[in-house]
Length: 173
Image (cartoon, rainbow, N blue to C red; front, side, top):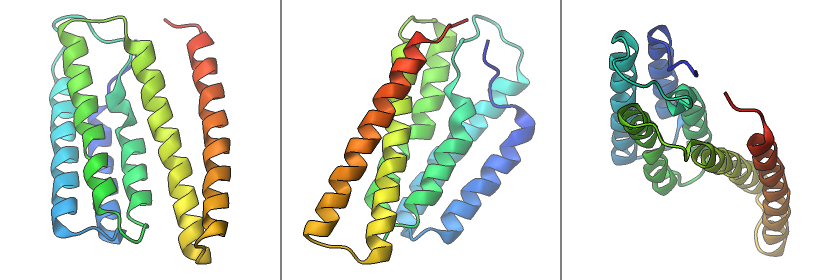
């Protein structure tokens, strides 16, 4: 059984949110949506952590990935125009809470593919952020930027595919 995000870690999660919003280039709207999404997931994680389980406890818990989600938000904040991606990112914390809530209501067998999908989303986002960071810092444009984007995409896809294969072959609980 995977342990949910412990209640003592929640202040650190909120501090990481504050750091991401303080150093990021987000507009007030994008920052507010990201903050509301994260706070909702933190409140849910706190309630779940403080109450004893009354039913089945999910074997996979996406709430434990909340600090990683916030590191991605921190990375998004370094982009020149991060608002659209930050609004899209806001689905991650809420989706993690909804997944946990649904799996506590009725466990389902699709957790492996859902976790593999989340793994792919997270790592492809990391590769995208790396490519954008390098392109913006080096001032690349045109052909040079396209070549670098294709190279990062190819490396990212190979990395993610091998990770998913490793994940699916691993022995589960």
